[in-house]
Image 1 (spheres, rainbow, N blue to C red):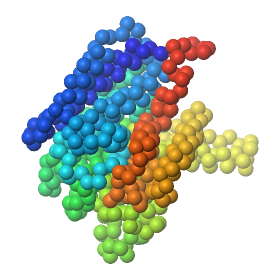
Image 2 (spheres, rainbow, N blue to C red):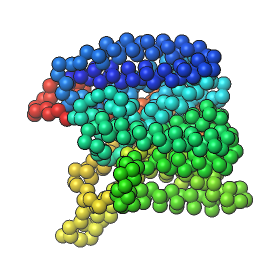
Image 3 (cartoon, rainbow, N blue to C red):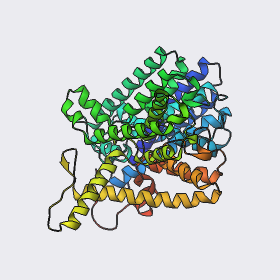
Image 4 (tube, helix red, strand yellow):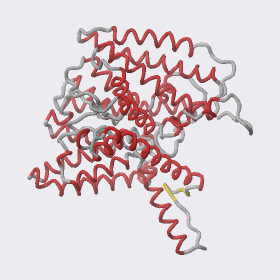
Length: 488
C-alpha cells in the first residue's frame, strides 16, 4: 500500500469538499442564517486536507487496491464531514441521523429520516440537495475535473466510482474526460433550472429540484415532494429530465461530436426506452380507474416510472396506494435501475441485458452442445472475463442483500417495509413501500439499522466491491503474499 499517495488523494478530496461547502455558507448569508455550521467544518477540512493533500508524495504510484481504498474511504469521510453542518445547525441533532441523511445525499439515494423538511434552514436544504448534485457524477470525478491527477490514477478511480459494468475514456486524458462529463452535467442542470423558472417555480426551489434531478436523488424542499406544486408542467419537465440523467453520458458526448450513429445503435438505450414505455403503459391502464382520466393516469405513471427506474425517488402522488400490479412493477424497476455511466443506481440496464443474453446462450448450449454461441452487446462480443464480472457482481449483490435483509428484519417491521427499505437503499432509490413509502420516512429505524442502510447505500453507489474490499485485511498489508504488484 502506498499510504502517502492515499493520504494525498484523500487530502485533495477533503479540500474540494471545503470549497463545495462555501456555496451553502453563501446561501446562509443571503437568508440571514448563521454561517458557523459550515464555517467550522470548512476550517477543519482545510487544515486536515492541507496537511494530507499539499505535500506531494515522493512515490506516486497508485496500485489497484490503493485505488479501491481511496474511493471507499473518500465517500465515508466526505459523508461524515458533510453531516456536521446538520448537527451544528440543529437541523438534524443526531449524528447518526445526520450521517444517514448525508450518505443518502451523496449516494443520490434520497431516503430520509426527516418527518418534514420545510422547517429546515435554507442553507441546510440547499446543502442537502447539493450533495445529490455532487454525488451524482461522482465525488472523485469532480476532483479529477478541477485538480490535476495522472491518467493512470484517474482511470482506476473512475472505474471504481462510475456506475456500470464498463468505463471508457472520452478524451485522451482522464482529467479532460472528467471535465467533459461535468461540462455536460452542468449544462443539462442549468437548462432544467431555466425551464423550471419559466414555469413559475421560485429560484431556490428550481435549483434544489434541478440538483436532485441531475443527481437522480430525490430530496425536495417540500414535504409533498414534486406533488406539492400540483403542476402538470413541472411533472413533465422533471420527468423528462430524470430520464435524460438516467442515460449513459457517453451518448451525450457522441451527440456533441455528431457521432449520431453511435447513439442510435446503443442497445442499452433502446432497452431503456422499451422498459420505460412498457412500464408506463401497463401502469396507466392499471390506475385508470383511480384517476378517471387517461391523460392524468398517463402523467402520473410516466412521472413515477421515470422517478423509480432512474432511482430518483420523487413522487407526485402516493403510489403506495396504487394496485399491487403497479406497485410490483415499480419494485422491479428499483432493481433494474438506469443505464451504465449515468447518475442513476440499480443493477443497470446493461447488466440486465447481458444477463438475459447470457442465459439464452447457455440454454442454447444445453440443447446444442457442439454449437458455438457467443454473447454480443453494443455490437461487440462480450468476453468471458466480462461475463464473469457481471455474474460476480450479481452473486455478491444477492449475498449482501440477503445478509442485510436478515439483519434489518430484527426491527420487526412488516415484510414489505423491510424488503423495500433495503431495496430502495442498496439501489439508491429513496422511497419504498408501506412505512417507507413516498409519504413515509426512515425515522423509526434504530441507529444500528440506519448505519446498516448507510453502508448499503454506499455499497450500491460504489458498485459493491470498494466497500467490501475496504474491510479485507489483505488490502492493508504493505506487501502482497506472492506475485508482483503493478501500478494502474
